[in-house]
Each structure stands twice: as C-alpha cells, then as structure tokens.
Amino acid sequence: MIGKNTKENCIELIGKLRREQILTKEEYLYLIQNRDECAGELKEQAGEVRDEVYGKRIFIRGLIEFTNYCRNDCIYCGIRRGNHRAERFRLSAEEIISCADAGYELGFRTFVLQGGEDPFFTDEKMCAIIRALKERHPDCAVTLSLGERSDESYRSMREAGADRYLLRHETASKELYGKLHPAEQSLDNRIRCLHVLREMGYQIGAGFMVSPPFQTEEMLAEEMHFLKELNPDMCGIGPFIPHKDTPFAGEAAGTVELTLFMLGLIRLTLPRVLLPATTALGTIHPRGREMGVEFGANVVMPNLSPAAVRGKYLLYDNKICTGDEAAQCIECMKTRMRTTGCEIVVDRGDSLVR
Ligand code: 5AD
Ligand code: FES
Image 1: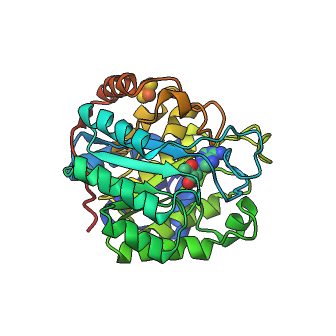
Image 2: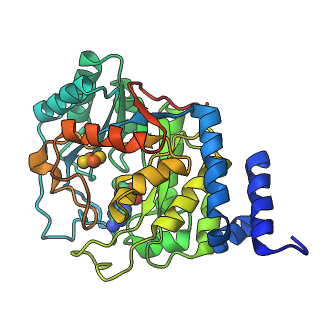
C-alpha cells in the first residue's frame, strides 16, 4: 500500500477481499482502523455478495427462549448465575411446543431452542421436546442453543432429530476469553464442542461480541482468521451491551458502525455463511437490523416466546421486542425488511456452506 491515500488503499483492500475471500491480519486491521473511510464501499460490496449467493431472501428463525437458569457465570451476561436479581423462569415442554405451533402458522420453518446452561433440561427432556417438534413439523429445522454439554448429550439430541447448533465462541482470543469468563470456563472446550458438533452432522453457528471490555482492534482482525479456518454454517455477531446487574454495568456498549463493518467483512470472507442481523444490533440503533441486512446479513431471529416471559430473558439492558406478541413481531419485521429491498421468505434456510 504505497503512494495512495487511505481511502484508495481501503477500497483496494475491499476489492482484494472480495476476489480472494481472505486478507492478512494486518490488512484486516488496516480496514478496521480506517473504517470511516470505506464503510460505504464495504456495504455495497457485501450487499452484492449476499445477493449473488442468497438473493434478496431473508430467512427467519423462531427463537424460543425457554429457560434463563444458567450454571455459568460469564461476566457480561445478565442471566449469569451470580445475578441474584434475575427473575428465573422455565417453559414447560407443552409451552415450548405451542410456541412452535403458533410460529409454524406465522411462516417459521426453523425453531431455535435457546436457553442458559440449565441442568434441569436433561438429555431425556430435550430429546422428547425435539422429537415432538420434528413429528409435528417434519418440514422444519430444529436448532439448539444450549451452551456446552457432553458429547453424549450432543449425540443423543442429534439422533432425536436436531439439525443445527448455535454456540458462539464469544472471542477467539484466549487472553480476552479469560477476562470475560471465570477460570472454570475454557475457550478450548468451547471450540472443541463446535468441532464435535460438526462431526456429528449438525450445521454449526459460531460468533463473537463486538467491543466487550478489553477487546482490541487486533483481536477483531484475528476473529476473521479464526472464522475463515472454522468455516461455520452460521455466524452470529452483535455489539456488547452492558447489563445493569453485572460487573460490566458501567462499561460502554459496542457501536453500530463497528458491528456493521464486521458484518460486511464476514460476508466478504465467508460469502456463503448465514449471517443474522441480531437483536443486540437492533437494540443499539432503531434501524440496526435493517442496516445489518444492508451490510450483507440474511437472517433475522424474531422471538416466539410467550409475552409473559420475554421480559425475563435479559442478557443485556434495553432489549427490544420484549413486549410484543409473535404475530406483531413478524409483521413489524416484514415491514422493516422491505425498507432494505429484501423480503422475508417461508423456508428452512439451510446453509450453503457445505
Ligand atoms: N451484550 C451483548 N451480547 C450478549 N450476549 C450475552 N450477554 C451479552 C451482552 N451483555 C450474547 C453472547 C451469547 C448470546 C446468546 O448473547 O454472545 O452467546
Ligand atoms: Fe419485534 Fe419489531 S421486530 S417488534
């Protein structure tokens, strides 16, 4: 990068990334550091690549947050076991199934069962729920997001019919992982779980937070190399947002600009990845999810949980969509997506990665 101005260098690097689908860490870092100069260019290229691979079709996932009990103590998370102010809840199997039934009528063809690491939901209980969902809705995908469990547990749930597993790695940096989690939680095991899940035939989703305390731009550049190597089917990223009853209460949230920039970099690095515009992104900016789609995202995950418990699954402050019924939420989302020129479709939305 010689003899040109910063903006020209950035545009050249974005062109190279689109062609080669990888940059050096230094090149990613240069783009991240100079993102103000080239966010418009990245948005344009990332939108085009999304269109080439997936078109203007936006996949929806019906998120069922079914327990906020958690045995872990992630420093940033509002449902950490150390937060004694969290009002805990569990949905019954019947409640979970009726959320999915209602979601089916609204056009959802993927259900995401998400919860804290709650030992109450044994393999036996999870398998019974998975079997019931697959029996009632054989044309739907069941995605699990239950954190780290044993290999045996993952195997039995896969045999019961689960199709996909979301397990954000949170950060690829050992150093940062150690600052965001107590010593009993390990990045090595988390990454091992992702590999085990893929071996068992799950489509896997990884992901990280943008700008939690202690994250550097170098670490964000390294995320891109980690993702390239893992090559997940899906990658969920969102800004860190402080929660008032955690040790990070007074910390700054991640910005919409940096989160959008990272979405664009991911789309160019992994053209076929499923990329959600997350609720956290919608929380820090009223048009966050729409802008995420403009930067190459192609998935949104509206909440299907009963309105009565929605306000309790609070990982961070000011979470949106906590009061709405599922039917309202999907109508709202359809309108929002249309403002980007994209359209929500009735489809399982399987990964094209493999
Ligand atoms: N801010 C933003 N995202 C958070 N998550 C947990 N706590 C927070 C927070 N305070 C994310 C984690 C987790 C996902 C379910 O939510 O990345 O994997
Ligand atoms: Fe949930 Fe708008 S998307 S209310």
